[in-house]
Length: 187
Image (tube, rainbow, N blue to C red; front, side, top):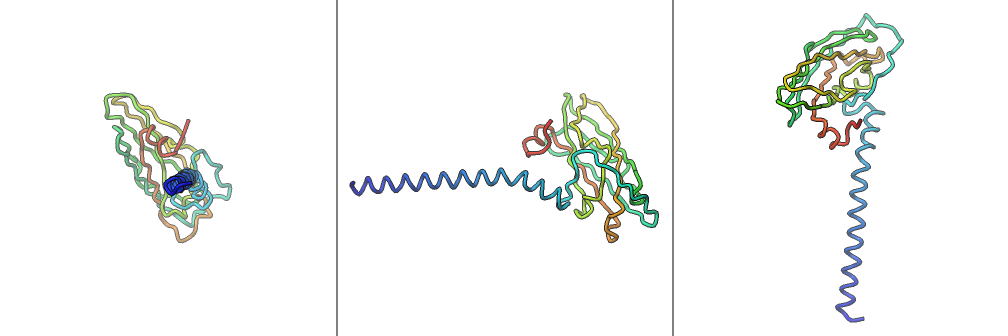
């Protein structure tokens, strides 16, 4: 085998090894998305909340405490919708079932869909925030110029740590295609 053939074989081995490493890195990156979601759901980190209705806590209402729930709404880029929290602050007792209202308006000239993605801060409060009814569980469709009000029915678990006095629930509204592209909700 000549020197040039030996060098060429070495280059081919290096290219093959590099491609395998690259393929492994891509696979690892894709695996991180669902692993991150599971990690956040288990630990309550990053303010991720449940994507479906939850069972209410039967521990009763703790009337000795009040929790201030701030509701924030924003629309992601590429969406011709406005999302507004009609009840921007709700004060509740842990264990109490409460409701807040949100208004969706399609200011565009075509029918479109979106999905509201929630997050809670401080993140330690995320696993104590139970949603029984939420527009975030389903894809929303609005006709051009249509406005609709939708409720959020929730409960703060009485086991919420005593040092947490305020929770901020933020909804970001994304075009449905963008949510799916981010590895989010699928119907």
